[in-house]
Image (cartoon, helix red, strand yellow):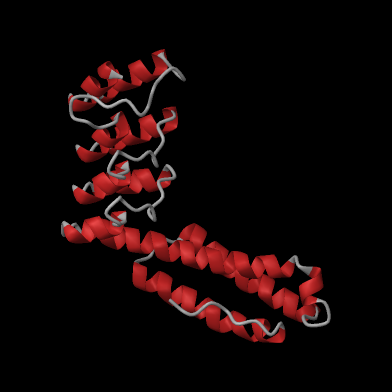
Length: 206
């Protein structure tokens, strides 16, 4: 991985691509160079989103942790590398992971006053909560024993429509944190009457 890290430090995307193409599947992605960072962490810290994408696609684990419990996302958030933060999330980086000191990527971004990163990660979490709420309702639709005698055909159609509406919104929207929270709370309010028929209480609003 030494040559790959040299290409990253030199910001030579073409060279990195050449090296990745030449040795697919033969790397120790946890290897750390003199900077004490993996290739993915290094690319994230120096602000190279294209390299982050290449490394993740080649097999680098976005959730690999350092000895102190820091992932590439933690480090990109600390350094305010917004485009790398977004690329890591797209690659599957878990924004909920905590360092050994107990901080999430969002909390690190806040501590280092990287507002764009912290706002984006707030939105990522809010989208997760909304998606989880929709999937909860979807799960009830498929639980015939739970809804038998409680939801009629019209109820099931309305719940399905509510889920589809929010799923489509999630698929086509990158709204800010406040709008996502609004959408989540709106869904909770609309779905609650159907939960009431099951004598269940929807999770509290955000």
